[in-house]
Image (cartoon, helix red, strand yellow):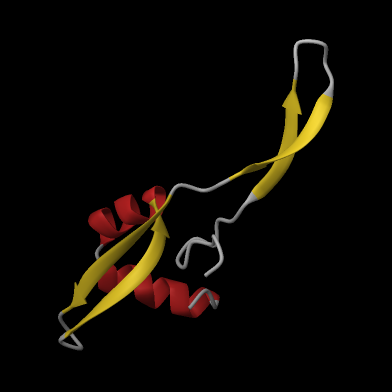
Length: 77
């Protein structure tokens, strides 16, 4: 699977390593992704999502049902 958050769409960014002599080489900045299972009471089943930690905090604040509904409206899921 690719390194993309399924809710927020965060993905790998590209930048530079900069040495003391200011020499630049390419590098990647990876999002902090975690695999997490959630229970959806309306459907009575578990789903597994690959999420950034900021998306997990959003789910804890707003609830899984509201976040999934908003993601479907925005076309993320």
